[in-house]
Length: 327
Ligand code: CA
Image (cartoon, rainbow, N blue to C red; front, top):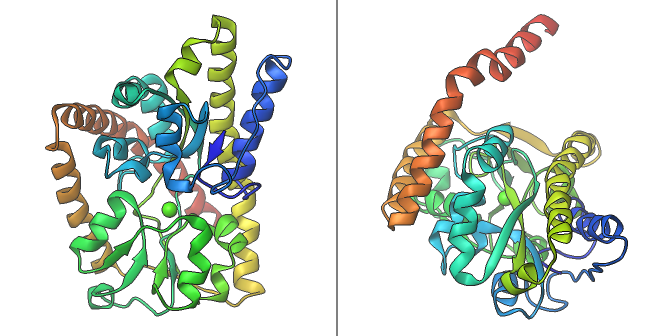
C-alpha cells in the first residue's frame, strides 16, 4: 500500500495502517499488506498512477489530488459548500455515489472505495488576519482541488503542496496560508509555529473523503470471500477514521488556543458569500466538463436536495435546540 501521507501521520496514516491490519486480521493472514508512506515507494501525488500500473496493489489517498488527469475525481474528494459527512456517506453507500466513483476510475484500472473521512475541516492557518475580500487578493495559499479553484476566482493564488512540505513553505513565507485538515493534523505538522490566525469553517472541504485505491487485476484475482473482507474493512475504516478525528480534534484545538495562543476566527460573512458564489461557478463548470461529470453532478445535487428538508428538521434542528437550551 502506497499512501499519500507520511507513515503514522495522525488520522490519515494511522487510519490507513489500521485498514491494512484489519484486512490481514479478518482474512486470517491470507492477505498481508505492507504500508509505505509518501515518498517511500512513490511520491504522494503519484499514488494513483502507481496503483493504475500495478506498481502497488493498494493506495490510500484523496480523490481531488487527481484533478489534472481526471477532473471527475473531484466530486468524490470534497465539494466546496457541498454535503456534510453524514450526507456524503449516505450518497456514496445508498445513493449511487460509489457506483459512479467506480465507473469514473474503471478506465484507469482502479477499483476505489471510501476509506476514511476527516469530517468538516478548518478554513486554514493564515499569517495575517482576513478582514475583507481584499485580504484574499494575491494571497498565496496551499489549497488543493475545487477549493483551490474557487480561491483563485476570488483573487487568491492557490498552490498544491503535499502535507510533508507545508510547514517549511509557510515558515519561509513561500506561502501566506495553508489549509490542511483540522486541529488534530495541523498541530501535528506544527503549522501554529508559522502562522497565528486559524480560520473557520472549512467551506472548501465540508467532508473530505479519503479513498482506498485497488489495482483492478489485484481485485479481480481475489476470491469472493476476500473481496467481501476488503470491502468491509474499507467500510469500517471509513467510519473509524471519522471517529478518530471527532475524538482528537477538540483536545488539539484546546492546546492550540491555550498553549500556543492561536487566534481562532470566523471568516467574515462577505468573504464566505463571495466564496459561495465562486463555488457555484466552479461546480457548474466541472459539471459541464463531460457527460460523466454532468451525471455525477446531477446525482450529487439531487441527493443533497432530497436530504435538505429532512436535515432541517433532524440534525440541524437538534443542533440548534441543544445549543439554545444549554446556553
Ligand atoms: Ca484540506
